[in-house]
Length: 95
Image (cartoon, rainbow, N blue to C red; front, side, top):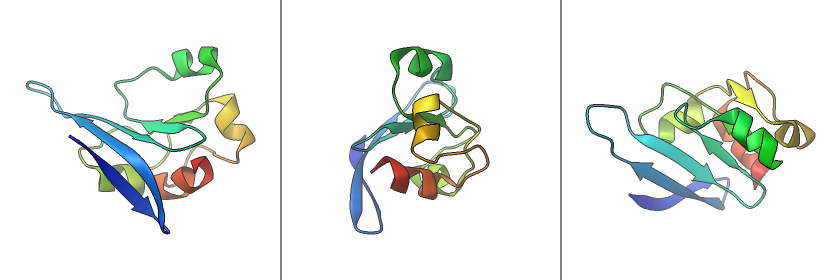
């Protein structure tokens, strides 16, 4: 499933991949970076030099927006993203 997720009038691309016998893989992609679920590796995003953060234990895009950032890259930190921040706030900084 590919769709749009809107926060404060700005839109991000939402991608949801259903997986067998598992929670879905979720990613929200904005202009300056992305939020990913726990399936994807933050260390790889760090090596690639992208602004990214992880919010784990999510099943829906709304869960991502309401969840807390568990980890983020140094590029994301430069944008003001921090662990413990709500996904909605992190996504605004990535837009």
